[in-house]
Every structure is written in C-alpha cells, then in structure tokens.
Length: 336
Image (cartoon, rainbow, N blue to C red; front, side, top):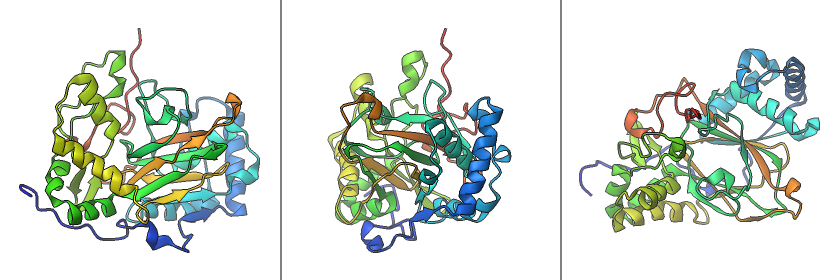
C-alpha cells in the first residue's frame, strides 16, 4: 500500500453476525405507553391535515418514548449502528397512518431530506421496473449505503416469499479486506467518481466533481461511502474510466459483506421499522417473489434523515450538495 496509513477499525460498530447468535438486543419492542403516545400524535396530525413534510418533533410529542428515542439515537450514533423496532402493527394502521407514525418518529432522530429530484421525503420501496435505482427495482440487491446519515425503512407489506433485509458492518468489511487484500485498500481509500441520477432533468453536473472514498477517516473514526450502482452508471453512461483493480476492489466489498457469519438478515413484518447508520452499515436485500396481484406487492416506506449532532461530512465525502433541507438530500429539480 502507498499513501494511506490504514489501520484496523475497532469498537462496537465492527460487529459481525456471529456476534449476535442467540442475541436479540437489536430488536426494540415499543411499550403500550409508547404506542398510546404514537397513536395520539398520529390522530392529531391526521385531523389537522396539511403536508407531512411540515410535521416537526414539536408536532409529534412522544413523552413515553423519551427513553426509547435516546437509546435509538445512541445506537445509531456511537453504538452498533442498527435497530429494528416492532409494535406499530398492534395499532391496526392503514398506509397513510403508518406513514405519519414513521415520519413522526423520524423527526426525533433527524431531519427528513429529499430522496430524489421529485422532492419525495417519504419514499416508496417497491418494484416499478426501474433498474438504475435500488429502491424502485425488484429482486435481489447488492450491498450499498444511501447518501444520507440515517436510512429508515418501514414495512407496509412483505413479499410472498424472500425479501429479507441483509446488513453488514462496513467496519468489519474494511478489516477483512485489510487482512486478505491489502493491495486493494488504496483503491478504496482513493474512491470513485459517481453518477448523479437526478441529472436526467437537466442537472448541469451529472457526475461528482471529485472522487468519493469508499473508506475514509473522520474525527478519529471511519466512515464508508459505497454505492456501486452509481459508479457503474458513471462508467457506462458517462465514460468515466475504471481500472481493473478498482473494479476488483469495489466488487470485493460486496463479496465480503455477503459472507456467511459477516452479514445479518432481518425478516420485515408489517409495521416493523429499521433504522441504519449509513456511514457505518451496508444494506442489501435477498431475492423475493411478489404475489400475482400488483396491489399486494412488497412495499416499504423509506426515510432519509440527516442528524445535526453528528460531525458534518467534508465535501469530498458528499455525493450531493447542501441545497436540500439539512443538506445531504437531493434537491428537487425545477421542471418547466
């Protein structure tokens, strides 16, 4: 290796699935009192009407969740970086009510930002036949992260079969590659040029103007930026050169993260919420089968959250600018 003093990353975020055999501490079940608070807030917001984007934590008072929220914020910050929350299914909500509850809980963790040039802050993860974005495609997904601090997923409806959420610690992946293929680490620390998908509506900058490292140091810890579909789009659609070594390094991240004993699978059920620290946790999806009735397709809601209390990412670690609310999101395109 040359140019980078690369060391192993230690701590709670450097977990592997084998660490959680027989351990369900990553599952957080909401208490009856917490559910009652959520229900009161959901009904108040629903009765008031208006845009969900305008709902803040002040509008979604959750006194019985104060301890829960503090624990979740710790888990997502200095902690292991992932949590699965159960209990909303007990409230019998329809899709709109689930969306209000999801957004409201999210306001206590971070600030919701836009997920595409459409300006959607409550995204819909389902198969609509698009293949150049992960959340609108069906089937299996490779490991990746989303370019925001925290991603939240809420299960409205599971698949007929399959469709497990697969996660892995990017810290653990980093350490395994450092052990096995140290010759590839420089490529991962130098990073890649990324395609910016929203450019199809006239964005003047279809590519990032800098390489974004897959692994980088930030305030005495490490962060990860791994979005291989955007690297492929830059190469295939914009002619950005990628060397054989760079391709091998990029592919190895995915391969290591999918190794048994490294990844953890979660089976989403109706009403379940998953929150992940995108700076430290990679996620993927196993292949799945949808019911024949299109109205019963697998359907998740998605939040992108920026967390003001976290160290801001320097410009070389950002795929998008600060134009969106709290930065880190994708600015809505002006369509004439």
